[in-house]
Amino acid sequence: MKKLLLCCLLISMLTARLAHAQAQIDTTRGRYHQPVFPAITTRTDVVFGSAVTYTGTTQTLRMNIYEPTGDTVRRRPVLIFAHGGGFVSGSKTDQDVTELCQRYARLGYVTASIDYRLLFFPFDTVNIARAAIRATQDMRAAVRFFRRDAATTKSHRIHPSYIFAAGSSAGAFMALQTAYLDKTSEVPAYLDLAQLGGIEGNSGNPGYASTVRGVINLCGALGRLQWLEASDVPLVSMHGTVDATVPYGKGTIGSGLPPQLVYGSGALKPRADAAGITNALYAFKAAGHVPYSGTSARSVAYLDTTFRFVRDFLRPVLKQPGTVTSTRPAVAPAAMQLYPLPAAEAVRLVAPAGQPFQPRELELLDATGRLVRRFRWEHREQLIQRESLRPGVYLLRGFGLESQRVVFE
Image 1 (tube, rainbow, N blue to C red):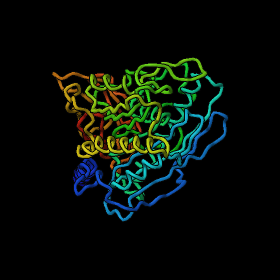
Image 2 (image 1 turned 135 degrees about the vertical axis):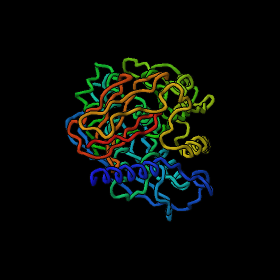
Image 3 (image 1 turned 45 degrees about the vertical axis):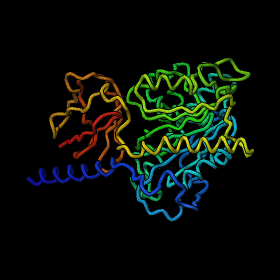
Image 4 (image 1 turned 120 degrees about the horizontal axis):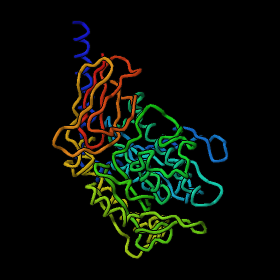
């Protein structure tokens, strides 16, 4: 009887925690739309991890964090920005990402501009793609940094269900890959992903999820349209229509290198539309690469447009529960069926009959919100083995699905 009462108590606690985690963001009183905070607080060179570079040395990874001064809200959305520079140059202090971080912080967001591993050799498109993977691993570590903080010290007071990946140029490649390059099978074999450390990498903060709530893509591209799938997270893109560095539509990159085919913002939008992904695209007519970068009057005008368009896209997303990731829920199961509960050795996971089934990544979290397992739901019916998991209540979740409790005796 005592065990049963304890189990019920844990379930109630987890249910309350889940309801709190999924609560939508309060966007009233001008938050996230008007600069309600005249001052911001900046924390520079915050260490969020470390990783091995292409030369074999270890690089300490740092970020600058911007927060609205005097804000009393306990759980706030986070925008993580990555600078451009073709994976060979750039810094977290670059003018465009710094300005955007500061502007969004005045609206009430917590924002961060990150450094990541640069450079590659030999200088060819295979190694620039490997550099993009390494950089994406670093961005995933930054996501995990904030999620770990939310589960432990809460020093930045962020909402773990509302972390957004953002970037300019090369940084936008990273943001897009963080959200949509989420399966090992999607990475070309010639990149030797295992040697790089896998999708997640080893840049820091293991044990926490690196999933994001949405993507801010400023003049970036993806290597494959197929990486965008139904139930993926929202996407907002901005891109110059005559960009000669990163193509607006389908085209090649790598000036001076063997050409590599990529799909810019203009090609990503119809794919996202077809997949039912909430998305928006602003085309800078007759503009080139990153027209918002710089201090000239023209560049500042482009930056103003960038700021406002992204701001207006994000605010409705903040009003949605953190588990909502698609405008076409009919393509995915509405719920997961699990039995028996509680279980001793394994729980059977079943997709509801009469609904289309789509394989997807699932995550299992313990009662503290810590990620304990990530796996692929490949078949309509499959077992979740307990293995080394301790007795207790866990949360099973996946994009576009209703989260469910798992109980092991």
